Image: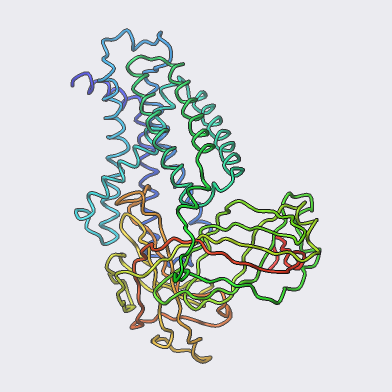
Length: 515
């Protein structure tokens, strides 16, 4: 234990300036976040955006601390001074872990406790989530930084590794974008989970291998092998099979989450000047005006992906792969636009002749659970399973919303409100008496807390529609206005088919920037 403390004290003496800079950045960022809670969101400006840059600099300072602490006793080569000392690798590694805990984890934990209390939440109640945030920090920041540090001896080498990583990620992104069906859930989730497991195991193995044996080139080759394994997993995963099994066809008697039908009246063709991109691009965008119907009250339909097949009367056909979509359909919605890409060569051959278009739609039905009615209050109020909420302006101050602070993670929410029940008054007549809906889905795979610096998340309940008149004052929420919120529960996954006969694609060509 004395050797661990000796190394720890030495690291603190050598890196005390770096520690102070890191603490200053963390405290400044936390102060700004706490100050922002008392400022309406529409008052944010350029100065606030500059403060937001600390979101990058705080974790960057932590990475720098880890790198410099590890490289104090470089593990690259065998001619460093420290190898002549009676150091045990296990104690050396323990000293570095103690340094990370004291200079990064402990200050962050204290700041998070203070911020939770400042936001009006009991830190004791959310202690498991606070500890989980520390675990996520170790997994996604400390371990990668340490793995880079153990195979390099200088900051310049670290920067070269970072550059190589950026190029690798660009290459991976290009590869995955070219793999058919890779963008549609849950295939991407399966690959991401496998990749995370492989990368985590490789990085931890490299850290222990370097401290125990200092086999630098073996460790570097192990990291390269992990990168190759990630590419291999992405390349061999049967995305199409996963999607097909995850979204089975509807059986007799089953209703789709949303029914899509085409508007038979084609839109006016766009002017050529609207085309901001040259005709040499490989794809042409087609926009089909669709009617959406059949979404039941208390439900929300999400389209996860689409496959488009174009069939010509002479037997020629073209089919896309599954393309990620993400469109959301609420009860009562009628009109939407479905945009998809068609190979330009195919488009040029068939654009002026009638074709049949077949669209397969992978969709998910979400339903309300734990629905409860809330009454908007003039000041801050506690909303169960959400956080502390208040009425705030939204958009250009002609509308408003319910803005909340949620502890540890942003909750998934859905809800609705009846404009006829609003307690607000209007000079230019009542608002449109159409039920207004709210939808906000968040990934729940990270456990009891999200990865981040701050344990309090901003949640905005926006009950609105893009069809609202932006010139009218449509403040639906005033003290005493009731509304309903619920937790969305993922339900039936299904695949529906839609046939569109005898259309000319040239009438539906869409250009970026076109309304």
